[in-house]
Image (cartoon, rainbow, N blue to C red; front, top):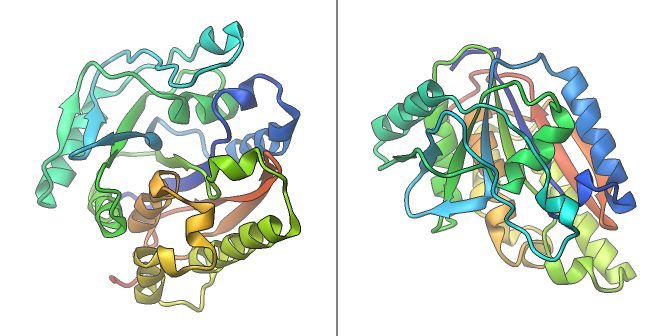
Length: 274
């Protein structure tokens, strides 16, 4: 893996709301704008989004993927959003190769477009839409170890000046977003965020300990309250599997009234195997 590769996990908010001026996403918009300003502009971007699950890791391989407006009940302008970035079939083929070499059964998909887990954060970070993008699916088993293994396989990807983005949400309980934000809810939210921050950032943890915490994430404080279904957490597992070390930066944001986090690994530092 090239040591200049940046790896980030972002909390991408609720549907298209960050692009529609929603005040409950202002903090998130500011954090993503700040994050993009700290990154070297990449030559290509690989995104693992919470909004695509397949039976095997699947990679977009089209040269100009369309957008998928995979949300409902928003005003007409939410369905007019454009992000005409190109695909990158060569990168897709290389991702396919390292996953296949790792014993997985990856697939290339030349027809699928980019879902809002891709185009919402990218439109905020790189509004010019001039950087080639490839999307990699989750595996619908939603097994934590599988997604850590996908990240490990990506360590062998050779591609200069690549940005890898895990696009999910560190808190994703849909009912809680629209229910009273009681002190109990706030405490549960904060306890999981604190656990996640320690897991991803604490330099005193060995990589074996960090790996085991992420494999066993359900034992974290209030884990299943914060993630009744784990698809929005698993892009982080892919990011850590690739980065293989403590996060260099954590960015906190209040989104829809909930505490959430984003993590940045500046490069793959070749830490101990776990």
